[in-house]
Image (cartoon, rainbow, N blue to C red; front, top):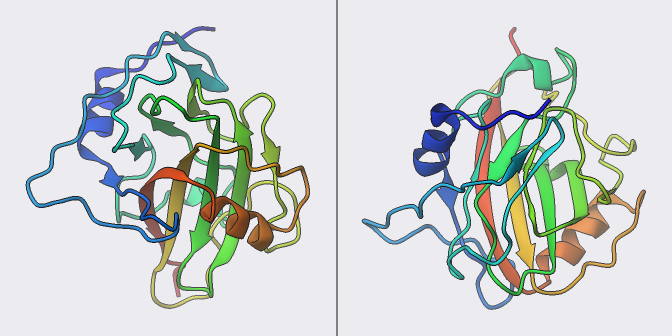
Length: 209
């Protein structure tokens, strides 16, 4: 069944995004300049349960937005997406990517657990603008996470202080060449060294007790 994004989703893309851009080496993340404003939210042409498809190459070449209807920046990730719930991946969305993008890739890393890799998806078509809950874009590939399984493994930190989970979307100018089942950390290293820009969304999770 085809659904169109709500006004709330469009608003989320305008205000609930952490913007970053790659430095020359493709690895360093930079905060946006003081007073910077987010580009307008995307206007996707088709919405489905799996992904949203829109026009590629219509975004500003220096910016990219990543957002979720389930996760607000630096706010707790709902338990349904963790090992304490259904352990499914959360919905994500982004604005149209810059012209020249040949592939999108997504990584999710716990920065409080020695860079534990929770998810790596590569080979995403540049026309895709969203991923539904528990879904993977058609034609994309997934690396192994650090739990040694394919695809998503949700937050599952030890009891104590909250952990931070960094979702990074990469708009790559060069194909990654990654395939299903490659080691997650090697996949992340490959993606990070490729030219392009990225956007970051960080959520937290803390287990009770």
